Image (cartoon, rainbow, N blue to C red):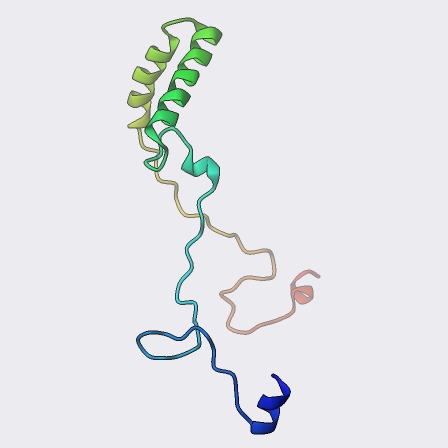
Length: 117
């Protein structure tokens, strides 16, 4: 504040006001996590530019062709679709076994040292 403002008791008006309500406050209502570059530029992502995805697919095909032979990539794409349809079996829920002397079914709470002797 300048000396003239202090004497007159005037308060500076903020430069930015809300056009709807005239408030000078801002509140964060929501926050969205930014995706990583890896997620954005993955060749199968919708956000990846088509030309970059094509380059990545061709590079991927060349890598597998040089490593395992010309037809490996085509075979891999055909067989991965079949294996991708299989679902993992549901696992039964885990059960925590009580430690000796710490059973939860007792009507009263007692020290674990009492049961250990």
